[in-house]
Length: 140
Image 1 (cartoon, rainbow, N blue to C red):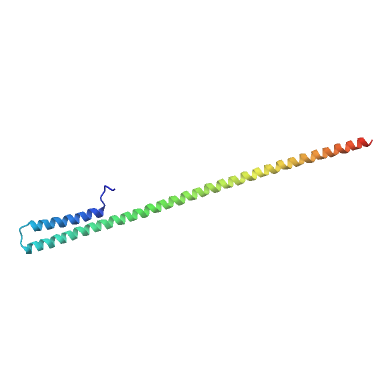
Image 2 (cartoon, rainbow, N blue to C red):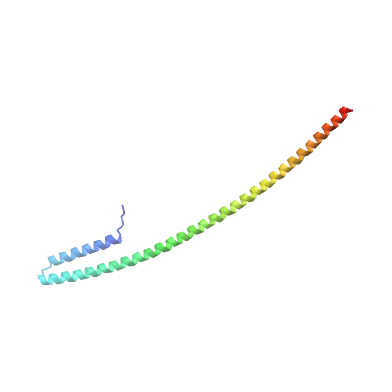
């Protein structure tokens, strides 16, 4: 539960307290009916003026809070956009780096495969040459 009073609670308390005080003062004062009605009217006008002052203050504070909320939300939106933009840039850079690394690995694998094929061809030629030499010697 909140321990703080809101502006609405304060205004309501002020109005109720003002009315209660005015009624008590009028009922306890030894005055004629005409004087009491005049005092009641004067008290009502003062209370109305006070309530209008509080309404104006509340409207000003509400407007200030609205402006502050708009400014703060705009700043948060801009920060979110900046952060997102930076994250996309970092991800793009990392993806490019990974693609380049993958191409290097693929090139190295191709070179290794070419070397293996070359060695395999050399071995096959040597085997064929040895087989042919063996055939030639056995025919003699």
